[in-house]
Image 1 (spheres, rainbow, N blue to C red):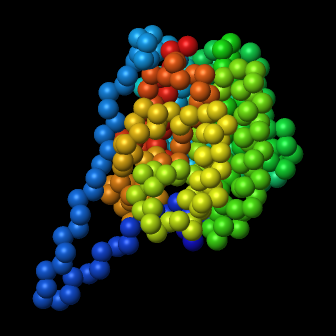
Image 2: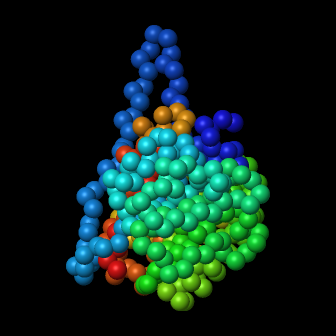
Image 3: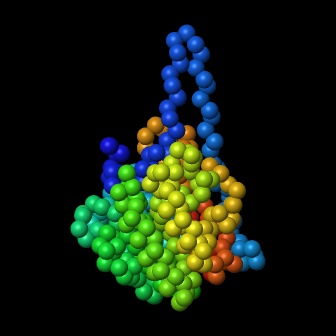
Length: 312
């Protein structure tokens, strides 16, 4: 199946979020008018926490679906306009030796960290670009079976850990569901260990729509990758371990807020999508939370960027 650069193995069956195409009108009869799309408009940024502290830390996360193509699509122009303190990228699909100079030479982010697949060039991959140098940076989650795919970077800052992740999906036909379940257990243990030392900010493409409100077509996707009971339960167990989905904390009833749309069937213009990209916080950081933005007008990938405002 062609998905314009998205590998079949890496497709969350995310395309199954598509609604069926309306049947053609029978000759001589007026067809049913298509429903107008229900769009989501990102509200103005909240720049204070509940106690009135001013936001002073801005983190952006974006699954770029291929770094080189994203750079050509002017993704860096948007990043410069957004001006985060840290930009985290997932699904870079680019070996460090092949990184475009447009991003390696960015003076705005003097501290840049890259991780890619050991075995398959052009597969998976994450990056973290920082204005301020972290105290320490590590790669992976200390489990060889997971770390060879280049899915996690962790940066330690003075008052928290920042983890960016590109979580493996169960794949078409759920051929990797068992592996995904193992990943969820091991990744949760890794995050919990970090949380014992300092609060954690986890961002990235977590490849799960947690609740029915988090995708357009919940009913038709319950046996598909990204919305299986097992994947959803894995996310629930992460939250139960002391973490919070910051978007749902702030906007518990907000529907039609998605971060991924397949390229097929004009899904983005119809807002037939999934919320797969998250900022998950240690509960200890709730007093510092100001806002979690979904920048759904930013183009350049089949995902849109998300931005977190914290008062640290």
